[in-house]
Image 1 (cartoon, helix red, strand yellow):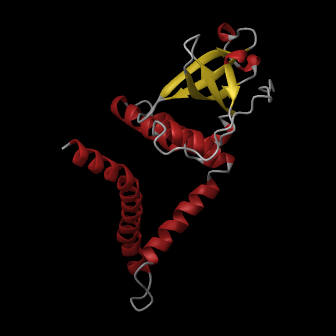
Image 2: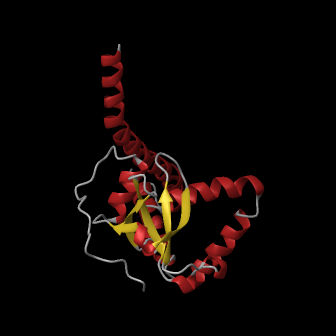
Image 3: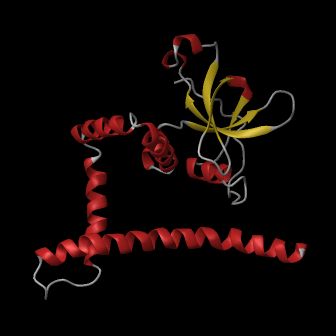
Amino acid sequence: MKFIGRNILTGLVAILPVILTLYVLYWFAVSAESALGTLLRTILPENLYQPGMGVLAGLAVVFTIGLLMHAYVVQRLFAKGENLLYRMPLIKSLYGAIRDFFHYFSPTSKKDFQQVVSVSLGNSGMHVIGFVTQAITERLPESFREEDSILVYLPMSYMIGGYAVLMPRNAVRPLNMSMEEAMRFTITAGVTGVQKQAEKKDKPLSKS
């Protein structure tokens, strides 16, 4: 039974990411075709509409939204809409968790995480992967400014969330890992593995 259970678990670990990815793509295609396809059928002559145009329209809408999000006015309007959501008791918790999760994989999140580091936990010999979110002392809250310390974010495995910890600069070591590699490795508790794990031992953390 242990042999059977172990192989079933191994199979699930291997196939579930593929299934979930395909399901998300399928959900997007079906939703876009259903919503935008119906809209296009009412606008275009019947002989011009072809199956799949709703999906193309959905991709165009998402692409346009991505472009508009670079505009200052759109960013301000979006921020005001988010502030309304964050004031709603139940919705703010759900929306905040979902937004933070997807923000991990956003191209703009690379600006928030300045360096992937290895954080040593006291004299235990244990290390965890973290992300330096603020290395400039002057940008930290006044009561949180300790000499030669940096703010490090420690994400949780298989969970949404983590901890922002003020660490001595000498307690962390830069790692030769990209943001995507480190986040994927941490979220899956190391199941995915990484191609590059060599540490940059000679490269100090920048203070600017």
